[in-house]
Length: 312
Ligand SMILES: C[S@@+](CC[C@H](N)C(=O)[O-])C[C@H]1O[C@@H](n2cnc3c(N)ncnc32)[C@H](O)[C@@H]1O
Image (cartoon, rainbow, N blue to C red; front, side, top):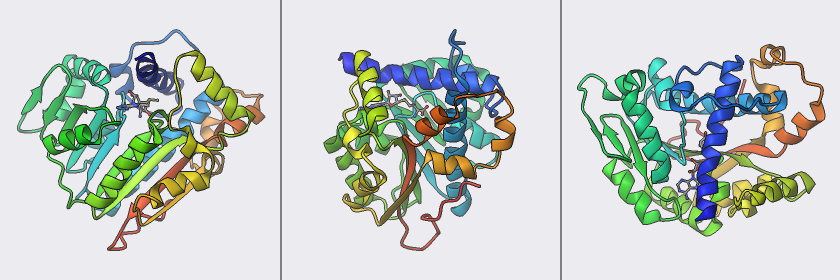
């Protein structure tokens, strides 16, 4: 139980870091401050730049998928935490037909609470027909569903996705951002295999740790352990090969990826964000970026181009 509490708390860390970087001007997100309270901590420039790279690269991939499918698609974010992508896509008129967010009930209940009390968040969800069904931990609206499930139980996940009106015939994007590393490999494999077996056209975007067998990786594992947070899925984060293999071994057509130090160099807005704050620890940023990656895996029988990813 202590581990689950600690895993859930990683959402607060991520949301606070994102809010801080947004307030410093790294990227725009009018919604993150509606879902979090203002934290006390100041974050170092390398952390802010790392989060900028993470958010910017993930946004690029998600928007690309939606454009490739002409919005005739659905998005399922597993371990979504306080992610704000649904609202940002609405503002850009890039909404998929259906958007589902899954997390532990203790996280979804807090998100439900914030959505309920914020007109700006609620308005987008309600849409034109205004129909929104809300319980303490879940929301079901026309094109938005926030549901509670433990990713370690495939049956629970399947049930909640069915309740959310998922259509397996639609091109589907699955997103996991810093999530699978907290889930044991066996449970993750079951989820990945079920998706590969059930969704004929699918893209999976996974942002998380890589190159975790060196000293830096060990320090990260030890630090988290002191906070009772065990990285149960770290085995797949050994290398880029192990990250890709976990998809291809579970029936995906192909998988590719880049570590964040490669992706960082391709991002279009780097010149601007490097002028926001002075940073003298350049090696620290390089080290940090080389321990995270984005891996994408696809099932693309009609050659939509799901395998080609560019970050520029
Ligand atoms: C580091 S946070 C990332 C949140 C969000 N994806 C982001 O990047 O801002 C990890 C999230 O995964 C969720 N999570 C981890 N293990 C999970 C599980 N077994 N079932 C459901 N959610 C899980 C946590 O509750 C948390 O919200």
